[in-house]
Image (tube, rainbow, N blue to C red; front, top):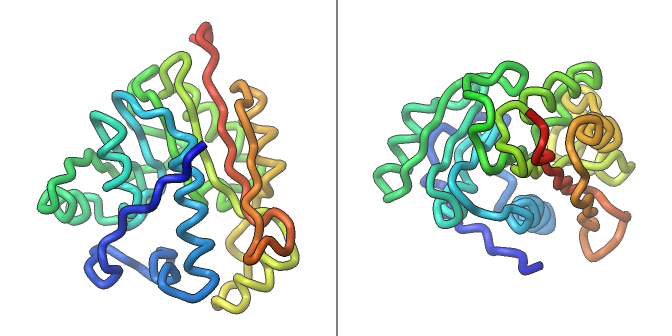
Length: 219
């Protein structure tokens, strides 16, 4: 499967960037390439189609790519300034439909989206909330629709890397890749789970891309 290149503006141009947005790491040596690669590997799993929902879109770094793959690009985020980010992309020829809200209670109709995308979001939920999150994801997906997510793997390298970037991973990440996969598997059909190796192919898989599908008869 071909890995698309992430279509980025100069990083200084993005609006609505807060301290928790990882876009500020994208220009770093070694770490920046890993941050971009995880997004690109998630994009490679998407099938394209009518409507996609990105949950936790942040500053919208995927929107240029997604607009070339889907007729409608929707976004849901707890903290992003939806209005200003939507206007930012509108000025650059990309129409988005952005709202504020949580994956645990989404303001969308049943069977609405062809794809749901979550990049580095689900690890921030408690393990006990994963079932509720995937219940909502399953509800808004069309039968046969796909969910693609990316999540950091629990590895000593990842804990050390986040420490170097100024984060104690244990204060921000509550669910492991196994917690997330088990919750997804309880409602959806597993298509694939792929590991992204660390820098220079070392340290094993440091990031996992999960791809699951809603059964055709799941109503």
